[in-house]
Image 1: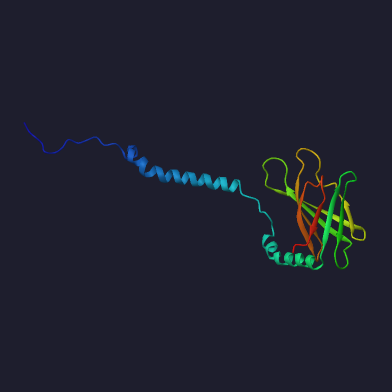
Image 2 (image 1 turned 45 degrees about the vertical axis):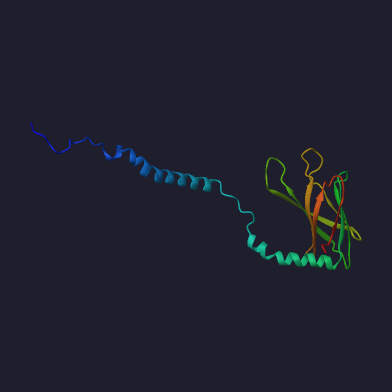
Length: 181
């Protein structure tokens, strides 16, 4: 009888069959796969640029403030009405000094349909038809219907001055704009 002090040889699995390998290498492998997928989603669903010349627009804020100040200096008041029956938009403008022959009207509203956060901007030229009276075509403005736009941000402007405001429900009531004090 011979006794051995050496423990018997145990059968050992190969390294890739060890359960601890999954714990040690599994986490980093999962992170690498998740980051590749996240990169794919980011490249595929990239946001559109809001404005190509955003920097230039940012620098123009001082000029816009000067145009608002010019409107205050001229004490401009505007009364805007939508005549859907004739398809016209009518403007009465009063203030100090000479009034321009043409005025640009910009109407901005949220896009209809779905949960869109985009903005639709319509630019309508208004021509002088009498002293302080202007008229423009209304064909681009949506009206009547359940999904009709109810709130517009409006901007009356020339190269020298501008008036801004909000117009709630243009089909029902006119809006009055005054130069901000």
